[in-house]
Image (cartoon, rainbow, N blue to C red; front, side, top):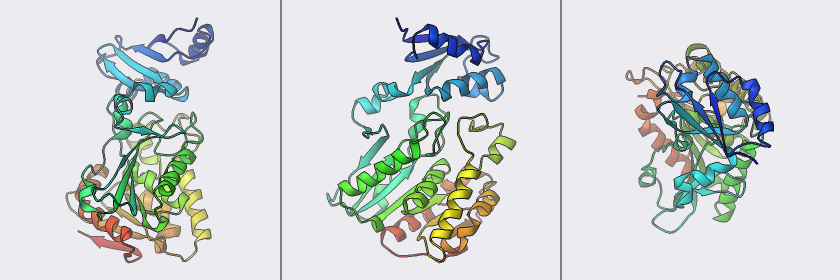
Length: 344
């Protein structure tokens, strides 16, 4: 009989897990990891994995089996199987969040006007909370107040990976990006929205999502300091996003270099009517500049020189004015100067 819960410890070899699953006659619904032997046993497995290679190996193996950390307490981290997430997540169960036919968690906000002619699609930034909500961190919760009265908002969760799938494909979910594309397409079709009245928006990890899906689907986008390479976090932040051990089938560098190159050939000399908000003071700036170079004359790049921007997470909160301006400019069918422009 299949057990719903299998227990592991930090001393469990990841290579022993397949045998445990076979002996159990299949995947359990949950894995629980005893962390009592850790230097800080109250830390969740994600935190432990940043300094403990055994914890990291376990975390990656469970992630690639389709399990997500959803709870921790002293001496214990709990993981849930992917197909059980929507049955366990309170906001899904009470109807706050919806689930597409293909399993993409999302939330649709209707304008008070009752008329829907435009759409903003929002992708969430990084969150390290050891709960399912880290996959759906609220981004610009008050945006509805600052867009045209006929604008609806579609927020898309980023379930997958360790700290999110970056709205890309993962080794466990090789069609994740396609399912997200279809959710956007079906939402547009359901409400009869003209594709020219759609803007994708996100910051950081959400910026990765808006840039990728904007280029892939041909929609306008406002991407705020997107993460388009794994290099910096792997080299300087101890693989903080957990991208170095096979969670993703391809690196972001590969994905975006190919996508940008393909887009530049297909839409040569054509304005993309899209915006990247960034800052040369951000460590992501040189990576982004290199990756998007073939499209530089087709995009509006707003470079903030705000002296209070000292690191990547500073860019989004210090450039909100530019984000609102860019979103509304694109929603209303106007355009911004192409190429790079300095903003405060």
